[in-house]
Length: 421
Image (tube, rainbow, N blue to C red; front, side, top):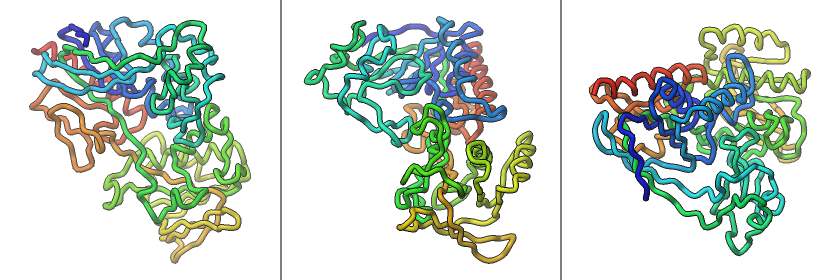
């Protein structure tokens, strides 16, 4: 067990876009920051996107800028594969216990890939939502930060194999690396714990897991990404066929008392964005968007109008009742109501994409601090209890731009706690 001292430092929990922004904004005005991330890499959900708003640019743009800011600033100390186990104390003087899980690859790693070439074990690739595999020793994604391999302890055979150790010329692999516990002293805490896609299998009538060519919107992002499981080619999972027709099903689990009662804010824009992915690859593809209401706030209204003008995109106002599969062709059959046209419709398509909602990570796992939550697991900040804050999707569903703005404000609030103590 080792101890780190630094009263007046800030702890940021979560290394996605909100956590990164909070960390660098605080560090660049002179505060020491501990950035704790449970995954083996920084970047969070944004790293899994193909493009994001408002410029429809790849996430490498914004992430790389923030990674550079972290690299160049000695006041940011980031801990990956780490979890906060305990928080005690008071504003301005918190005691933090952090458990760091072994990566089993040290800082000598040059990401040369020699270890991957000899590793005999395959594992499901969670970064690509298990649509492909990696070796037991892996680089999370092409632009991963830190640019260092990690070993999946559950998949690795350990010393009985050891081929990666033999292949590494730099002594970077230590299969005997053990967990570590750090004790930190900080003045304030910001939770940037992010979100998880709502589990589509829970929405039984929409066929995910039962109908082979039904995917989620985050799976679509990985299909369209150049570093995704199909090198950017959008195809059907069942047979690799390029889809000529696609149904986008909005509010898959959102605005539903049986699942997520709230609007997840970004789903409409995500589907409109993904419609452009399809059109770019196949301009003749037919696209059907089933919706309850379309939400395109502020400056996104123009983008909605652009998509609506495409003659191959059909908007259907109505809730999807059921999705089934044609067992002979693998085609997806969508049954829905048509509120504007009247009656019910039955549409056959090659692929269906469920716009699953954003569920806060804290819905499943609460943070080890005295904070309140709403009925959906979102963190509620109490102005009467300064010192511990939440930012981004830990508080409410928001897009990337809004997350960055909120994180900047969270950095300021965290600093004010220490200035006023």
